[in-house]
Image (cartoon, rainbow, N blue to C red; front, side, top):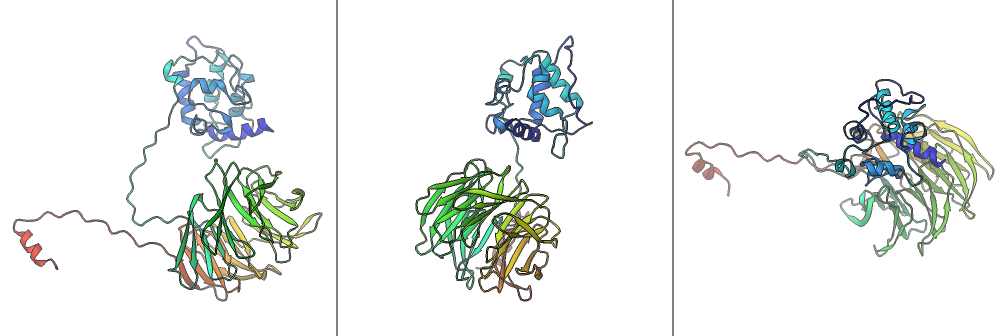
Length: 477
């Protein structure tokens, strides 16, 4: 398994426009008279295709190819280059196929694969001296672009308070608490490490949790006391950012789903890591806690949904059916059904028992990735958000469409239904937050609007002799 994971990660980096399909195994190349040069042939090839992901600063799979010594060192499991033996070198194996999943650019060409194999068969020698020994740093020139409008951070998450008076908005490094009746009244909770991917009010209405963290570094949960506005606790524990969180019904625990493939259960009062749920084969994007507190549901990039015993932390069973990443899961009000959203553009609902999950319905009303499903607090409705720039509201009992929020200017990433089932909040990629009336689908209010364009400064005009006096005389005081 470890070897296959290494292959998958390395394949992503070793890509260049393909001139033909990669061979199943590169033919061993005999050394030519002059030989293959590491400095003039191999090092430029690695820099162009591999070093972006495999370097001293970002060594994916533990491999760095930005200098000769690092390339020869290999990974923590051993070398990937065996001098004189290309057929035993993992580097050659992963760039030659047989069926690599490569980026749109395609695999390395036959000639590039053969060149690397030849260099290894000739002894994998360094003819570049100190230049090849040094770490190669990528230098990217970023052009200066003048902004026509101030940039808003994307809206990553939304949640209504228990009384419906406040909407929590998860943004970049902060959470905004907006008074729904008076949107100009905003309380800003700062100090988050990165994008706030999920916000959730505790069931008792006393606390707010916000989850995120910097990618590939750690996951973070901040918990605020709503009465005082103070940050009660900061929890860190995952090795990558947290995408979703869920409160236990008694408000004493939190479950977190992370890009590191793990789900954790935390004790809120102490921040203690109580359990780690480990069974997904890829990033976990979604977590939900059942209303009765007995089950936890998770959705993953491995296309599966898993149901867990919340107390024991044991997996009960796996639900399959989605054809792509499962981005969101949500229990109905009774905890007897689970609804899921996927990159396969579908919304599916499942009947749950302690032994299995059976399909109930499959909704295909969206034309692009469905990023979120969320039940209303009453349990009568659920809403969806999609990258097709629309949102939907459905009847929770039968899945019938209640309201379509027509195409918006940008993709909708987050939705939430007010406790009285009258209003749908929608947060978009462009940073706006709008409220829509569920009764007729009309816009009720805009809580965060796009900023006005910045007026460009006009260059000073050339003045004719004598014009300066006239200009000053005409200027208002």
